[in-house]
Image (cartoon, rainbow, N blue to C red; front, top):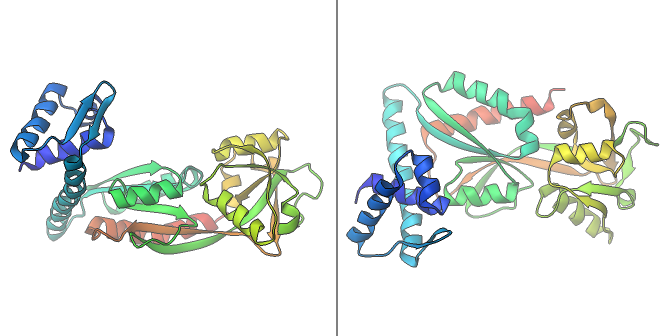
Length: 299
């Protein structure tokens, strides 16, 4: 079985299209199709169902995809370990992080990565915490920064820090800067992300313990748009202070501490428990454990 054919098959299966895979792999589509077909002939199995919208996996294709990811990961790990013997960290790290966090930490993390691992490659992918946990299991991500992650036997979590959540309102609104109780939070018109956003789920869960429900004015999934709407007077938001610092003009907003009880969002590093980490991935974990708390606690 040819490793190149396995890699081609995995990319086609993940992208759901020979056309998209040929672009991503920089190979002509007929050549890509021929390599995947040779793999099917060798295995005496149809792996993909081809249709006008792309491709879907057969049962055999699903089995092969799961095992192929593991095989290709082990090959990549072997290459990295051999590079380590030569004294250099190489290979690729796929790092996931929420968009609001990416805006604050992506540049310094990339700068530190390039400085410490100049022969390695970094890919940063933005996504929701729930989606990124699934990507860790499937092998699309190696490491993820996630908020309020649900414990899972498939994912190992390394807590980094707890960030207090605040009620965010316009700086010229009444009571700007004064603490607000969780009970009073239920009476605030909120502009908040849709489920399964981690902050949305936390707010609903904690209010539910008091027998209360949030008053949701608008559901918006992007932090910049949420802040724009708060600035325009559409409502108020529940975010970390670091999220507000990503705004073009943070002075437009007032942050009110939420008390009785305080709401906190836990940021953790997540990685798959199914696959051993490579040397480069372990170095990246160490970098993130050192750098992220510094970046998020520096004003």
